[in-house]
Image (tube, rainbow, N blue to C red; front, side, top):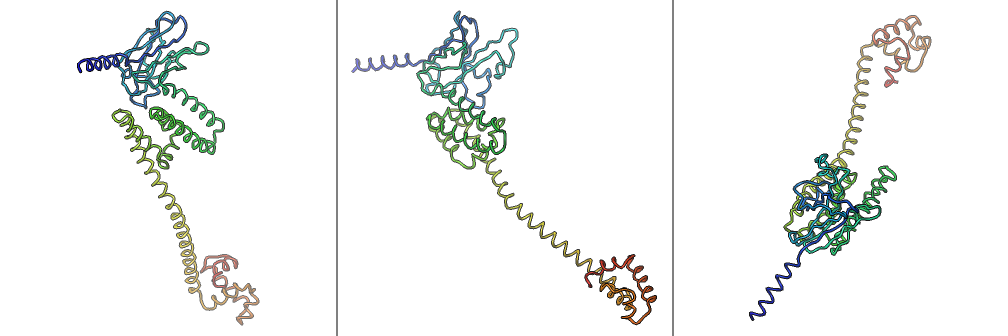
Length: 353
């Protein structure tokens, strides 16, 4: 029994000893003394920049440009890490390379855990930190996603029209999300989510619409909570999704309100215009009637004859009065109505014709 317990202890001790990572690579031949950082990224909104609080270790390259990080102090679960080359001179070093904007700094994002062995070899033309060879099948997924993002950018820039943007947004949201889900690694999906939901990208507007139409984001939260229940990035994602869902619901409610409000507003506007038009016509008619009633009986008869296009001579014959008397009555009508022609009388009393 004691012998069995002894072997179990030895086995566990050996397992612990062998549980370690090794990240190694080369930046270029004969590039010695360059500073290389290893960082962990818990906040997925900081994928694009480098900050001091992320850094775990630093080392320098040897005479052939090789570097290496190893130990057993990393998390046993997959996490997102960055290898960062600081190629700035000590005298000119400033905060720029800690925010990913220094032209002399290069970095690569990858997924790893405490058991992984990963190599970062140089590629063609001695390009550094752009290839990954790993014991972890998910380590290089960010590089694959970046290829898709470049294809997406090409599609967006091919024709910069609203129709093209809407079509490609729908296409690429689906393509990137499906690709991430098939990887069975929520960390890769977080990388995609960070890109699609970035307020600085053209995709953000579509993201706010998409979050209200699909349950993808809810299911991604469930996958994160299942695989990384105690991770800070899981809580960050769940909180952010809850807020964005509220924004999307609010925008949808406002959109639905306007969908019904605008037709109602248009109908009300038409109804008011008809009402004011009819009221104006009635007011004009009432004013004309009042003006007509202020005329004498003879003047009213003459106005009615004018509305029938009768001449002065015809009016005189009909009313058994002289032409000069007709002219006198017409002049009195002009003064009372403040008009100067028979046509104005016709326009004034066209409702009586």
